[in-house]
Every structure is written in C-alpha cells, then in structure tokens.
Length: 84
Image (tube, rainbow, N blue to C red; front, side, top):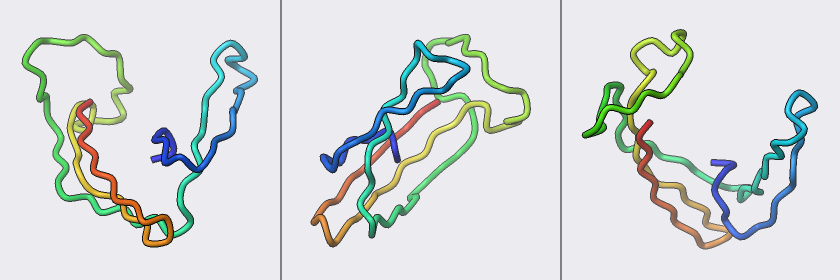
C-alpha cells in the first residue's frame, strides 16, 4: 500500500546499494483498514511475460489479489486489483 498515493504526502527513500533508484514512499492514513477480497497464485496473463522472480516465492511467483482499503478519518475508500 505504501506505493499508492492517498494525497497525504510522501518521502523519498534512497537505498545506498542503488543510489540512482530513489523510491517514493507515500504516507498511509493512520486508521487504514485493508481487506483482501480474493487472492490466488497462478499465471493469469494472456501473453507469456518472462519476469525474473525469486524461486523462493514458489507457487506465488505469479498471482493476483484484489480488495479494498478504508479510512474513516480521511473519508477514503480505495479498491485495488493487482496481477503479478
């Protein structure tokens, strides 16, 4: 969730091992509730995509998840669907 912009500001983080790749970390609402509706492992792409991922992920090397994130304080509802 820290890669989603909720409009609450952010900070830039630099990894000393990769100084040319700064990472922007967005602030999350303090009361954020994350609810996963569905998640499954497997290959869900129509076309073959060769993406190198650690073998340690096992069956979760590819998969998807979807759900909602809620913040009463910020009066926000977010929906996500992610396929990897």
